[in-house]
Length: 283
Image (cartoon, rainbow, N blue to C red; front, side):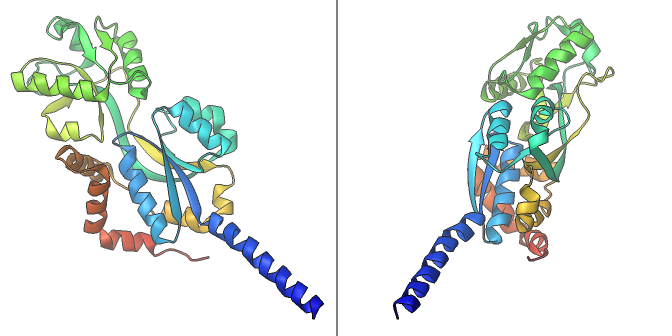
């Protein structure tokens, strides 16, 4: 009887140890940049994974370097990123330890924008109106990729304007103030962004190609993630969010909703699409 009891106890302990391991397999540690183009992608993909039975733990980051370091170390398992230009340095530095999982959106575009009523159309005309712009291009956070690219554009065109570091909120306030007063202003701007929807602005043409072409967003992960998590990989790869939808979600946030509310409303309005995404291979 003792042998039988011991065998039963060993089996129960084995099952008890196996249960947390199985539960752990259903946890996805997801990183995200706390920016308006990437937060909706993260929220929508999180919902798709949760519908497949996963628990998704989201860690926000404000700098690419910290996000990529966390991914390479395994603090997070997946991260949405542009790898061709915006975060190219970080991708190149870490790619031996990482893998591309799938594309999730396309069309990120950076540039210098002015209100539509300003009478220039190209970056090589900025010096002609430098005084009207107060000798400044209003930028955002110093660590953002668009700030580096704008610096490159200033060099390429020999611009006599100073790039002013600050924050997205400060740039937005300056743009709104200038538009309300019908005054000239030059700002760093990107799409997808609710600002391009809210304000009547135009991106200045870039005949020298100082800014990169429209870029794709990818889900990237630690090397081996797809092989070790085939069902999660299939769920992640089913998601594709057009930039217009990202803009619409952020427009709702600008109108007063929280990001979580805006994402939830988008998901509720696109139930059929979410269902199609969920119709994937089971393992």
